[in-house]
Every structure is written in structure tokens, then in C-alpha cells.
Image (cartoon, rainbow, N blue to C red; front, side, top):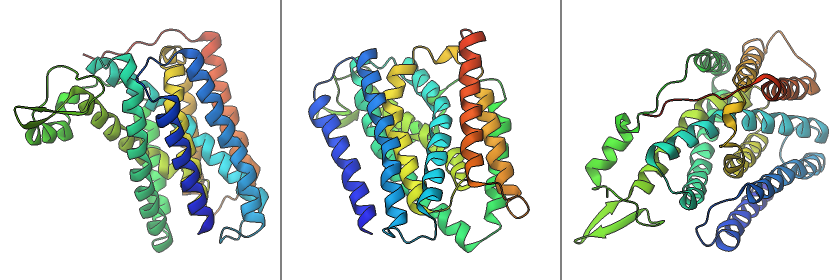
Length: 314
């Protein structure tokens, strides 16, 4: 229990430092600043594997996993979640472009979107673990979900139509929505009536988008490990790094033409691992190696032979 409390306190501290100190004032995130934050989050995420090693070696976590096995599972899960977030970055860029969110307000949307994602993913991870522990056949259900996600990812890109989103329609029934942005405010009062701003609508779409992606990514990590702490911590670190990676990669994500095929291959691999878990037992290092090779191969091929990849947003 103490390791859980310590982890959550550490994450809250980092987020408070981010919003309350370094990004207190709304401003445009430069490429150098985004690179600095991305380096920080990736470094912290990787260094956390040291904590994982000692936590499982010393028995701070109630688990039968050795420290070495826990580190392998943590890093594999982190890379799976981080790689599957690549598509999320692309969609967030399209959402911001669709709503014409000012550059200086995008960090605020992503920050609060990350907080919501932590809560929702925590709930989904908890439900997933309960289902897997109670119903063994749920492993096959999650495997089929991953296969469907892989096939769906191969389809041509779909146009984004937020106005057709039922959540957005529900919001418009609850609150009037202003036509113009009101600085970095999500809500304003107009003639004593509380109204949502387009910034909040964009936040809501980003939140719903992350939940949709979570239905793919969370079953994927269950193919690596079912340990609650490893699943949650690797997921959270991948989400936290997503915000800074967005500002670093959004402008050039179109160049990574072949990264989609790497993600598809990763999904097929973890789906096969779940569906064949009773007959195939790969060594603990294999998943990490396969994920690194597939992701690195997609990035390398994209940089060598990739080109611009435009998607319609209107």
C-alpha cells in the first residue's frame, strides 16, 4: 500500500510542479521546451524501473515476481503504451486544428486531459484486472479486441467530425457554448448563465478520444503483465510523456508514414500472446525485444522513406 501512496504522491508533485511553476502562465510551447520536458518524462519513466526492481525484490509490492522480471514487464508495458500513444498524438493534433485552439492554450487542455485520463484509466485498469482474475476466458476476449484494433488501424484514416459526437451533443444540451475563445477559460458567465467555451469542448473531445484509445492500449498491456502496480505505473508514465511528446512531434508526425504498421504488428503480437497464453510461453525478455525492434524499425523506415501524410479534418 505504501508503494501505491508514494507513487501517487510523486505523480501529483510532478504535475503540480508542471502547472504551478513551469507553466503557470499560458504560453506557446517551443520545440526546445518540448524536447526538455519529453527528455525529463522519458528519463523519469526509465529511472522508475530502478524503483520497480527494489520494490519487487524487497517485497514492498505483494507479488511473486522477481525484481528482474518486474523491470522487464514494466519496460515492456511502458513501451507498448508509449508506442500506441503515437496515434493519439496525431488525433489530438487534428482536434486542435479542427477547433482552432490557440497555441498558447493547448498545454492547458492537455494538462487537464491528462488528469482525466489518469482517473479513467485507473478505473478501467481496475475493472480489467477484476475481470481477468474472476473470468479466465476474458483473456481471449481481450485478445480478440486487440486483433480488431489492429485490423481497424489498417483502414484508411477517418475524417474527424466532433459535431457528430454524442458527448458533444449532450454538452450542448446542458450548457450554451460561446462562439469565441475566452482566453484560457473553460467556462464563463453570460447574463448569469454558465456557458462552456470552445476550449472546454476541445478538452472534452480529447478526453473522449483518450478513453477510446484506452480500450485498445489497456488490453495490450494485460498481454505483458497482469500485475496491478506495473500496469498502472507504466500506463501513467506513458500518458504523462504524451503531453510533451505532442508538442515535439505534432508538427512532424506526418513524416512517420510507416509507424502505423509497427503499431499494427505490436497489436498482433500482444493479441497472439494473449490468445495462445496456454500453449506458448516466451521468455521474459522476448516481448521487450520484439516491441523495441518493431517500434524502432517503423521509425527508422519512416525517416528514410516516409513522406508527408495529410488527413482531412473538415
